[in-house]
Length: 350
Image (cartoon, rainbow, N blue to C red):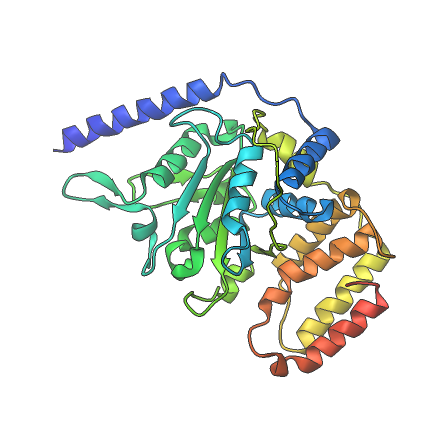
């Protein structure tokens, strides 16, 4: 039985290697920098009535965060937005078995990676896959290692039907990695998998009484976006994008490193101080994430309504990285919101 398991493992690895070789022959898109940004804004804008800043915000978050969560009531277009992201990056255009977009429908009662991915069966000496597409994605990325050229997206649809911190706990550590030494994950197989930075998770969550709340630990590591109200446009372009966007091109476009102005730093410190005053400390992790976001967004977003682009970028960052920390009734935070409103008036924030 052991020999048979080894043979199956070798055969499986050969299949992944063949897929990797096919992928290496794909012609990458030449879109880069502003051309890539305009391409994304135009395509998404043709599908949704989102303003440019909303689109810039979404792709900045997806590029910079290991986990991006789309929140909102049922029917607000969360799942379809995930599909649009996969389409515009060309992740569904590589060919059968080598596409790089996986959608997972989360079920109620998941409590570990065994439910999410599978488990190693000591009797058969094989890995029993509960979700073969997720396992295939991790196996593919492990073989690619530092040669991983294109983004890979895994969508967790209705992610909070079960407690994410339980079934996704093994991946949570990767959100904090600082080097390749922190990029390994064990899902119960004999060997660890290497997870390159090209892997990103998207999650959709509903905000109703039938779902599980996100834990503070997970909120600390995610970017949580409440999508604008979705209105499908009539006569939209139905052509599927044929561009294969590389990870380097995406990262170059949405992970800029501009300087923060003194006024931006002052505004952020005042906001952090207010959260701390009301018992909600802001971790160094969140501060670094907010600063990185603003450094990019302030140079890509457009100002308006007497607000500068950097002020709008601060608005988005606070709403997505800090306000999700609030958990309770308005009456419990009434004084906090008064203080925040005063800061918004002082620093021209919305």
